[in-house]
Image (cartoon, rainbow, N blue to C red; front, side, top):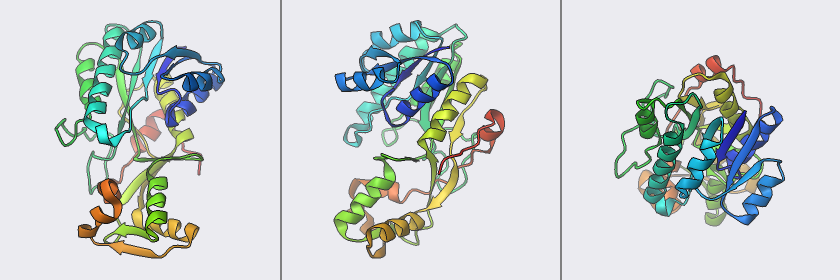
Length: 282
């Protein structure tokens, strides 16, 4: 199968490209810089030069593909609303090119805001698009389904870890080193679901090959308590472990405070059953 992958040199996308090629698929990947193109070419994937804002590039690549997996997203949090709008336009463009065909489209979303404070499942619906939560990926998926696009969603855990990770846990560790203490909020019993990037990559491939309808949850651990993460960071860097009151969180963690306080335990039971997905990584 010839598969077009956006975000092909990103944290999850680069692992996905290698997984797809190892499984015998042909991959064309989007690369927005010469360095990314060189990195992608080294995997034997075809390079498609452009970004998710190059709508005609996206449509042409989708036109020549048997399937599309959209993993690209700009994680510059200072431009979150603009990045969500660009993501929405990209998904709409890919879907328009696949409309009326049986060629599948897999879109990336997240589990973090599905059901704060309780165990989220695949049956939970993504929160509505608002000014506070402008990410519209799943809303677009619903629209595309009504236009005869074979589309589904893979929802990633908020922490997708592995060697070279620059995500949530390294950011928490960086704050700890800068502040001289490893902190959590309150009793620290709020939970982050987690998955290894290689397990997440394999889930995307299985979702494509099994042609089942999602959403699917790339979640290996349902919820790791933030206090446990902070304790591990404290041991690793020989730092004091401290609790911060909610009123102190903003000053200590800055813009990252809402994520540190996130309680988002999430099940992947349906995903595992339908796709026979068994996370294998640490």
